Amino acid sequence: MQSPLEDIISDGSKNKKGVINFNQMKVISSKVEKQTPSVLMITSIPAGKSVALIAAELAAAIALQERKVLLVEGDFKKPQLHKWFHMEQTADTHQKPFTPVLPTFLPNLDVLLAKGSNENPIDIWLAPSFKQQVDSWQEAYDRVIFAAPSLYSGVEAELIADGCQEAVLVVQRKKDKLEEIKKAHAKLEMAGCKVIGLVYQQ
Image 1: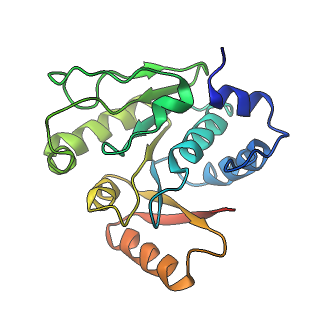
Image 2: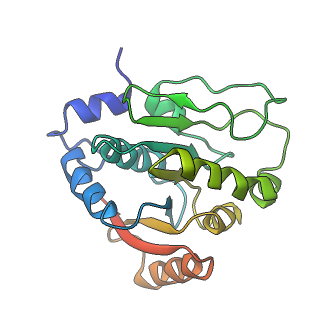
Image 3: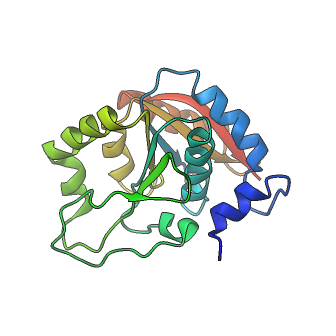
């Protein structure tokens, strides 16, 4: 049985509800890759959007360009990446953060899922080891992508932004107001995370 992401990639002509058409995602990924390869985060304004799926599609599209990509689950409270790859989340609370990195069905795409942990996610993002880990990933991968929580869900997204150079903001057409988009844009830029694009979701 294929994972939902495999279904989307193998049948990219279908524009399924709540999913960015994969052919459109290929175009978005080619524009992203015109930027200097760096650490990228995908986030949204309010919660409840398909950020994890959009991040997974983008990571897959870049991997198909023969770029080595690491996709990292950044939403420890409401993780979603495992669903799109049909992977089991580890429940080992003694395992170190950011382990293990798992291969996916695409040769150039690895994923790091959230795991069961008693540790406060904020403490993980604040720890010096976070930026050290990001640096080591940059040496091993062409592109690192975080599927981050909503900017309105707490400070986690802002802490992740501190470890990223670029961001793609997911906005909902006709629902997210221009003023909210501008505030989100400014918040990311203040964290040193350049917004390189918007993905409009119906």
